[in-house]
Amino acid sequence: MATEEKIKGPASYFPSIEKKYGQSIDHWMRVLSEAGPLKHMELVALLKTEHAMGHGHANALVAWFMAKKN
Image (tube, rainbow, N blue to C red; front, top):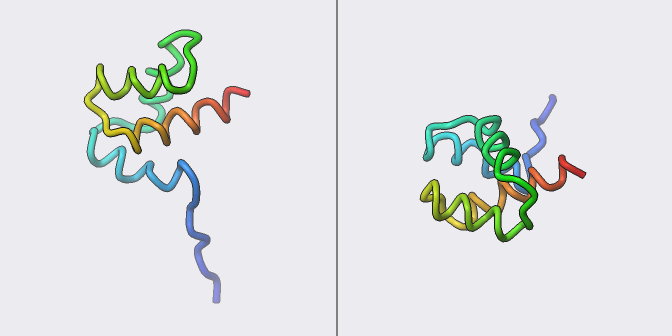
């Protein structure tokens, strides 16, 4: 019997982010990419102030973005 592996790390937030904010993860990756060369917490602040996102969701998106960028 196959068991599904539980998603861990920043990606575990993705379903709730998409549901709560009504945008795909690809959308948020574009937002972060278009923001310019900002540091981690600057990107978190951008999502929180300009998109009314909670800290945990913003931090998860930025962590994923930064990991994929490098």
